[in-house]
Image (spheres, rainbow, N blue to C red):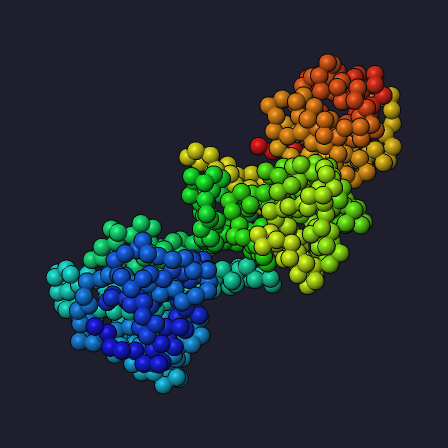
Length: 592
């Protein structure tokens, strides 16, 4: 049984958590706040168990990078170390609160073995330290690259105390066992992702070699002799290997970008960390969780995953999907814009200098769909806009106050946030940063993943060519066509959008044929279709007695599409017959 910890030991345990340090004990690790524990480094979520050492099903998740993260793991009773005392090996890059840790371990009866700068810092704090070279009989060398990579160190970590021949081998070679290993790694991730960047040689020097080796060795040894059969979530020690894998994935990603630069390496590891367990998935019978992508490419790259939730119920699986769709769409527009999304499709979009007017128009585009949807803005939500969101009545009856699942914006005024919080206890209020362009898009299929560039093209990147002959489009019509084109990019295929004066009037989405999508969009636009612009996410396979002719007969003034059909000539002839302007832009925007 470990001796009762002193106040300094308690502080030491806290310092381990504060400095994101891995600590492994070969004897029993208690979750008592007075004894030392284990804390997984930043890319993993911390856990605490109940006092029962075997029932891992009692785990309760704690917010990542916060909380004390101790856990209880059963292990064969610790034998005395090779030289009759308990030994702790400490090797830290981040030495915050190191003195508390050292004093706490000494108070618990440990002999401390340490390396280089860590040993010097402990000495300066008055903690007795045995330097690693005293055990290895070999000096640190190569600017500190070689310190702990030695049988006298790794033998003391890896030896199984329940195996007689292991202990005999240690005795024969005069190697003592380590009861505790405390490690944190060179801050490679923070260094290479810093705003100012880092020179290639400096990046290489920040790749930790000995630290990951010690973590792996200590974790492997803690597995052995340990029964984890009742742990429904798998062995917690396995998370140490996940952490090292995440560290290595950052190194791999950075080196590939520095030396090759291609987005599609021959192999790829995506480091994910659990942000939250969700109530359920897309449907109540599906279990689900939400993970943060810790790839270097995602550092400060914006998006819904890193949004701040100011208010409301916890986010659900579908909430994340819908909020992502709304945010990605609204961030495409330069003017003040409101986007309303339902089931990942924008059902209302409007741009105005007066954002309140834009909000009203976006809702009016399809008020039935907007009810219970997601509302996104690309500018600050101030007091006046917040009041409008809170009080706006449904255009269908003028009485029912509009209900939304989520409001997302880049920022909120203090008063605006206060007003929105008063609209509903359940309303989720998100503050997000704009997604950076050039991201890699990943999507899972059975047994594999599809990777592609994100679809970042906007109307400013595209040439719209007039291919009809009977009518030259007005500047206002060209603007309408480009607005509709930017909207249709975010609608599920087959997609049709009808728009005018920077406002979506109707959209048809997700139909197996383009004609049905057109008819849905026309029905939603109603009488406002006269002179409006129509955008199609892909070419029209037929024109006569099909989508193009029906659009012309409805009163559409201008059509924008990629072109590329073997019947493009029919589309041109049809538009010429009805006096409709036709634009080809050679860019398809399929969205599946």
